[in-house]
Amino acid sequence: MSLGGVLDGLDLERVGRDMHDLMKDLFPMCRSITGDGFRETLATIEKRVPIDVHEVPTGTPAFDWTVPKEWNVREAYVANGRGERVIDLRRSSLHLVSYSTPVRRAMSLSDLRAHLHTLPERPDWIPYRTSYYEPEWGFCLSERQLSALDEAEYHVVVDSSLEDGSLTYGEYFLEGDTDEEVLISCHACHPSMANDNLSGVALVTFLAERIAEASPRYSYRFLFVPGTIGSITWLSMNEDVVPRIRHGLVAACVGDPGPLTYQRSQRGDADIDRAAAHVVGRRGGRVREFSPYGYDERQYNSPGFNLPVGCLSRTPHGEFAEYHTSADGLDFVRPDALADSLEAYLEVFTALEENGTFANLFPKGEPQLGRRGLYPSIGGKEADAEVLAMLWVLNQSDGNRTLLDIADRAGIDFRSIRRAASSLLAAGLLRAVLDSSST
Image (cartoon, rainbow, N blue to C red; front, side, top):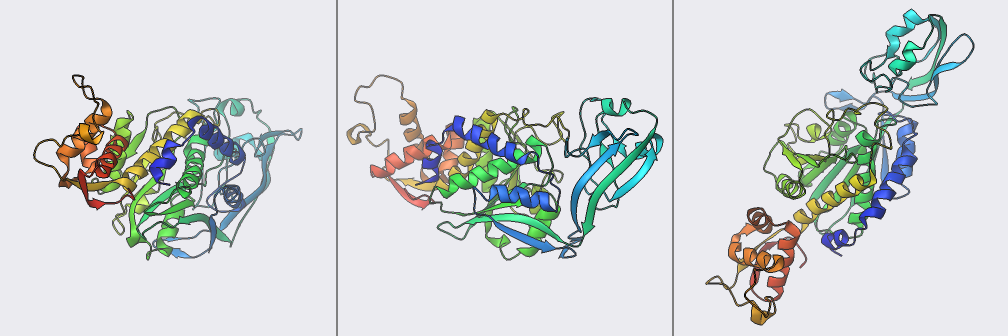
């Protein structure tokens, strides 16, 4: 089956619900850039996709970085004099600053305040904070929780460990007809935040399942990595793979109700940029230029690699109020938005898989479509969409323009142009010059 065929059979309502259900399973896990929470996340994904789990030891050099010590936490809380836990990791994995060092002591509220993080402008939300590379500890809570604390002594416990261990990442390689690769990457290291983190994890998981149903021309490599250090570590260990990567996308923030947003690769004019811009534009979304700030696309686009990897999201990071807070919960992410994002990703990869260049075998005037069963028997009416797509393909197929070129110029979605080309090819009106499909 072609990727376009998989796309045609997509049950959007069902797949949106299923993606959201996977996020519900993953949401409570206490994830960070290393540790058992990340492994638990991969074990859940592995029930759907046969990923290979890699462990990279602490101290392993990764270009200018070093794989850090592994962090795990068993318990973390702040208790008042009556033994009541006023802040408790068991209630939300956001309550603890990620990578907090071990603590067990009594403190006054005035001393404790230096280790407490809130969002005064959003008094009911808990912020997300980290301290990956500097030894520190802290708790996050709502401003309303903080204002309710008495000026008293508190018992602080962070039962965590920072020890030699490993950085864990998941990888699924799907072999295609060629060894040319498409890289699809998501960060899977954040704790309980749904849009930033889990929506991308769910999308990449379901995308891998859908593409595995097809017989793709490209080989596909799906990565579930901890942000920044994970992609850098993967690149440092796979420099032999990098030359085979022809296209790539980073998936993040794909479940909110905002419009699709595509950020171009550093190259700006790569095939992935053209395909994604076409799909996003046709779906009423936005296209932005490359920025060196964001998710792991900035690592793949670093000058030593300059890979054609863009980022396809909905509302970008930092541009929705709920970003990196407890308000980015499961109810913020909509199943219909998840399904729409998945469909858009599949459309992008269909355009890459099925693009091609053709030559019109009857270029002098229009060939007679009617006697080939390609034109309505009753004339006098405006051409329908199918006929119009065929006329565009015939007019533009000079042996140089690709189908994506034609779709952009005609203002017609790629799949309609591809279907028109298939009909014309079957009727003997076109010749494939450079066709990447299995027509």
